Amino acid sequence: MSFVATPQSMHFPEALPLQSGASIRDYDLAYETYGQLNADRSNAILVCHALNASHHVAGYYEGQAKSEGWWDNMIGPGKPVDTNQFFVIGVNNLGSCFGSTGPMHMNPDGGHVYGADFPVVTVEDWVDAQALLLDRLGITQLAAVLGGSLGGMQALSWTLQYPDRMRHAVVVASAPCLSAENIAFNEVARRAIVTDPDFHGGHFYREGVIPKRGLRIARMIGHITYLSDDVMNQKFGRQLREGLDLKYSTQDVEFQIESYLRYQGDKFSDYFDANTYLLITRALDYFDPAKPFGGDLTQALAGAKARFMLVSFSTDWRFSPARSREIVKALLDNRRTVSYAEIDAPHGHDAFLLDDARYMGVMRSYFDNMARELTAGQTSAQEAV
Image (tube, rainbow, N blue to C red):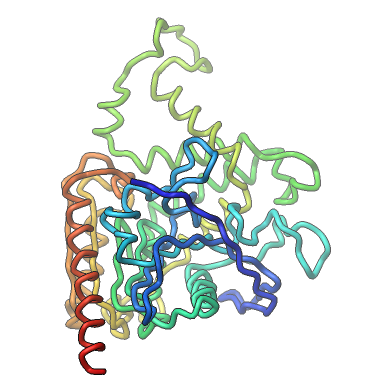
């Protein structure tokens, strides 16, 4: 069961100080909400998005085919995160290209499109902006912050930046920081974009062009890392495109996997902004809450007060289960309440978006328990009155 979603936007005239020392003012945050906020405003769940997602988390847009939210299988009436019980908020991060202020928008201090002049943003900056949006919505404490991949990093950062403003953190297919290999993949993708002749140093908007070649390659690189070897072999193997024989060509598209990757790259280059890709992958690279503590994650998480649920997937080699277990160990060292599920799923990193029954069952159980806590808390408050 799904529902009609309504995009919203909030304007912030005041300057937001950023980790880099820069600031941004007169910016907008695009967001959507699902469900109803209860009387004591205790049932709100913030959903943080990953690299190429947005505030459109669930539901569909009226009159638009194939417009379901990117986590519509997870969030909605009767779904694991049940909007009959929770008030769910999806926010598009600063620097994105799906409604919030980003490189494609006008710079109020320059009278021109930001382009490459858009300030570098970090996970911590996004969390600060999300907190300001919640202030405007009158929500002082969240029932939970939920996110997968880069969204999971934001959920983790919430527990450190605003430990008293949330009761649960649900971190799915994520990590406490990127490995060197992950940073390397991001850098290769960025080089593909910035070396595209149409990039123009990030000011391609004023030239009336888009660095589509670089974006295509960046997406192809990323897509390879999101899938497991097993899934690639199962879906494509060494199959040739239908009706083709080997051409012994270095440039023709002959294998099914080649065709699939080119399709994904073409589609991505039609809707995603090149500067946004650079910004978001760099924010991924920078995130490392343990760095100020000499790399000691246990010390870094000592200030967290939330209860945690972590989920990882056996074939996710980009955000491997070992990285989730690092977080679990650091939290247990701090005597925090932690639940952990390691799902044996064949789908690689993309598994966090799919309908694996065990994964969905774990999530449903955790959020059902959270809903029961809310009901018990409301009953206790009424009895006290």
